[in-house]
Length: 193
Image (cartoon, rainbow, N blue to C red; front, side):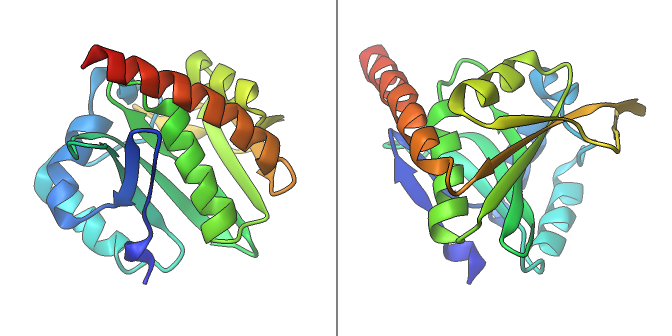
């Protein structure tokens, strides 16, 4: 069953979203640092619970919570979805500001895509103004493919999306790069405690 997929490494864990995560998802997706870069989200816990109930029935859609290890503190979320013919999209990626979970959660997401789900290609769409994530994707080896032909609507306005692509052949070098960054972030976290 899809909801049993999880992965843990570099001081973080991806675990399947559950109904009890609705409040965390609403908080993350409606936080000021995320609003300009993600699509419209549920504004209340009941709305998010209704979305989760629909999501649980989707066979090719995975929603993960990002947690600290140890401690199991929820610090973010991401999704792998739209899977068809061994191609999928990684997105819905939101991390609390100040938490160095980007490299670890990206490694875990791509590990799940390529090594657990057996995908050949993973794509991602990033709002063109989200320079931080665009730069991160380029640094880890995601290939920019230009603008996606269809804009998304965020806060009632159409925004252009930069499309990125990675294949199973790219994964070994991406994995090594992400592992290096994730180990540095893990050491920073350990030194802070």
